[in-house]
Every structure is written in C-alpha cells, then in structure tokens.
Length: 169
Image (cartoon, rainbow, N blue to C red; front, side, top):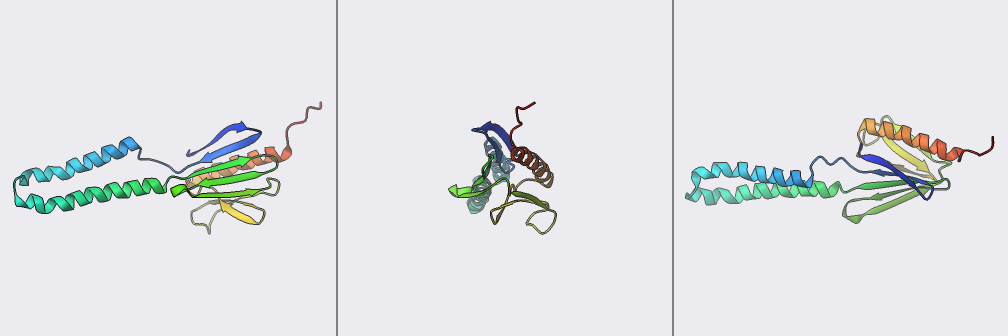
C-alpha cells in the first residue's frame, strides 16, 4: 500500500501517504531507450536518403514529447501527506508538486473521519473534519486502500481518545 504507519515519535502516531509510482527512474530510462530504438528501426531503410532528414525532426519531436509527458507526470505525482496524531492535536501536512505545502490541524477529540460513498471527486472519498474545516486524505489511494485506511485511522483515534492504559489493578 502506498502508505505506512511510522514508529511513534515523541508520543505521536505518524502516517505517510504517497501516490503509486509504477515507473521507476530505471524503468523510465529503459522505456525511452526502447522507444528510441524502435522508432529508429524504420530509419535504417532510408539511410543516405533525403527522406531521412525530412522524417528525423518529427521522430525526435515524438521522442521528446514522450520524455516530457512522462517527466511532467512524475513531477505532478511528487506528493507526500504526513499525518501526525497526538493526544492534543492532529496535524496533516501535504507536500505537493513544486514545493507547495498545505497544513491543517484539529483537536483529535472532535475529529470526524468520513468515507463518502458518493458525491466526491473519487469513489469512497475519505475526509477528516475538525474545527470547521474538512480536508481530503489520500485522494490518490485506491478505493480499497481508502477503506482500509479509514478503519486503521479510526482504531488509532479511538486508542488515542481513550488515553494510555491506567496502571491501577
């Protein structure tokens, strides 16, 4: 899953979420290399011909367009959501593309986790609502991942609201 609960730090539960990345840097190099090689194969038959010079700019433009589109997509997916749960505050920091940062915080006691079955930008839209503001959580996750995350988050919030177990016995 493209999220993980990190070990607690300073009494805070921490969750990191990120979009799926199916194309690694190495895969990108291989894809561009293979595409270039396959585009070059038909050029072997017209080597030494003026037709080669007429086709070459278009073929290079096609390779550049593929490279540019894949790079832009990769930059647009540079997202990391950092959720921190502590007994007195819950904070969500979203580090977006181009260094954009958005922060949200609320009191965990009044926090409401909602899974909207319909009406959101994606099916089973997951939101956190507190202190008069509602924010989305993990819109890049799959439906099943959002459902699982909601259950995990509610379990941790319940444990957080209950407080640490008392040592009386």
